Length: 460
Ligand code: PMP
Image (cartoon, protein in one colour):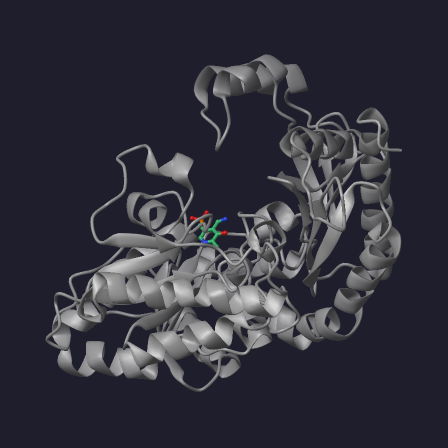
């Protein structure tokens, strides 16, 4: 289907203006200016159209966020109604408003009962900044101000602000301003690459016990929290071995270290459970949320606190010196309510668990198990990664794996498919409203892209 062009400007005009005034995310801007970015103009369900009328299947839900897909009139209507009634008010002057109150009511009706309070933000990065300050405040109130080291993981991603970058483990992101004091990192539970001769089970325990060793090295009286994504997202959709999370939880409890789950990608149905920690069966003290909270229709994030933490902060803490102009923004809250109700009432999360999720996972395994580039298929629900490898039995990787995955991603765009390359992995996370037809298109286009890549690199 060719859609009417955006009536006002040509693609070249947009590209020229963009190059003149705009710096993009995670890119060599000069190279991008030379190439010219795609100009997306419309979305519907899982599909996007660019300004040339070319159609793409979005296998990444934008950036893991459009859980309900594009073009939802109910979300647009919720925003419009709220914009007309009360477009803004703040949380500073002893004031609240129905949208934020009702959002909290809805959120805590879905969450396990040991969570009770949320602090709202505009993004995942901000939510993790709030996490760092809130965790430190918690220990201060309990008379342990020296307990302030935050332990994250190498190759973890928690955002692009200073604190969230320090918490994350992307070395190349630490360069601007370096690492902050009172942050530490342990290894990631990436068995395929780092597991050596160990079984997955053994490696999961080994990776978890790095946390114990780090706590003992730093001193448990200095360590405030361990922060991690239940499965790594930006790091490559890496699923830890089954033995990992129970051991991490044991360690955190033993040393009185808070366990903080970054659910920015995993939250709101991605794995078929409302939150990814429920899929892995552990109980974090805090949850960082964003993205799927509003299906990306409007920016919003938040930090969810356990009752235990909230009681300390609220009952014993006095004034909490924290606040954002747009915390609990009424329009964002109204969209979040409409979004969560749709995920719940249309049975979207259940469908991911019982139908579309198993279907995607089964199709991927059927199609790619014997593929000459693919060593392992990981994932659950509507999130998956294809790990490339040169030799399956030894799990030997291609020396030029990032060239291969980048090429595959580029071919994907040519074929009208958006999937992402991360290290030696091709990753996908389609919108949770994906039909079997959408999944068939995703899998067949991914096969086309991988086959063309394999041919170009002499593997087919
Ligand atoms: N945490 C995780 C796990 C993320 O994947 C991201 C973004 N990809 C963030 C935090 C940061 O969220 P934002 O980009 O909304 O600041």
